[in-house]
Amino acid sequence: MVVAFSSLLFMSAVWVGELFFVEGVLGRGDIAYGLMLSIWTVGMALGALMLSPRVAVGAVAAASAVVSGSIVVAGNMVYWFEKQGRCIANMASG
Image (cartoon, helix red, strand yellow):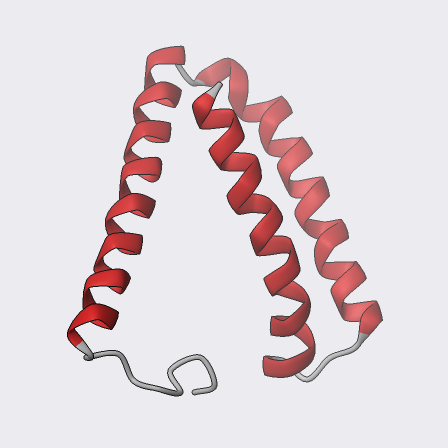
């Protein structure tokens, strides 16, 4: 349950960020954003239908633990760099 909650939490944050990525970085509009979300949705559905019978349950749990742990480590590193004053002030804007 914790893995599902954290996955949905981070996926929800990514969806919001993709809007700014498509419009700001790629310089595209609403149609490109809709197309990107549509392609992502179809890819996720096909991947779930075609790949799930081939993957063992233990492998999925191990991969989820590795991804969740990596997110925690990355977040802690960013916090540590910010606390040390080593983050670039305008890193997000390029």
